[in-house]
Image 1 (cartoon, each protein chain N blue to C red):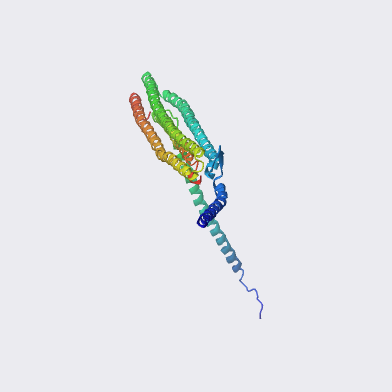
Image 2 (image 1 turned 45 degrees about the horizontal axis):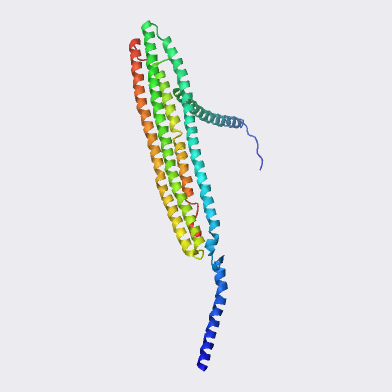
Length: 262
Length: 113
């Protein structure tokens, strides 16, 4: 009986110690995790899971804001290019109108130097040849200019399509990562640390993938420079043909007049 | 003792003084005229050169094949310049979008979660 009494006493002391330990530890755990009551069971919620909805909203909003700015930049790009091209067109039209007027004045003076019908016919022929040379040059310039513009707009548009695809993947990856984290928090709210680690890894991968895609952005500059060089080369070629045509027309006229200083 | 007394024949000294003053004045005027002349000549030469340059740049419109060709050549150069002048602007327009795209990648810092 004494032995039995000692065992009972020992069990009682042990139970008291365990109960005391539970009473001391319980408030600390509750403070750290919070609690969620679901039916008869109580689940601890980590601070990470508690704050996840607001942090998700912050990330989503910032993504949306910056994505909106990118959309605006694309719209501005299209408009700015159109404005720049229009400005060139206006300057070219002004230059051509001025040149046409002055050329006509000059040709009229030239005609006054013609005294014979042969000379007058030669001036008319010269005038026709000059006009043809000018029109040929202008057409060549217009074509080169148009080609340059189409290429620039094409590379900008193509780049826009590519980046839009990359952005869609980025946004989708971020959304999926946040949704998965929230689902994990809903099912295992006490596993905040591991859920956070998974989310951080997913967001990092998504971000680094998108940022890595940006390395190819610089190819646009190289392409645009090449388009300008091609256009300028076409200008030079057209100009060379133009000068030759003008010189030939002048020589024909000078032969009829019998002097070189016509 | 201690006083100056005008001596006979000392009137010539005033004449020498006057001549000396005239020589100095003439020298100063001469140097001034020389400097002005040189300066004026240089200015005139520069002005003439500027006028000549401006004249050579301006289209004479004298009814010759040369003037017609020069006119048309100027037109071609103007067109080339009009196009080239917007190249840098076009480049800037296109590359501005790159920075906007780069900024999206900085929407968050996952390490602060």
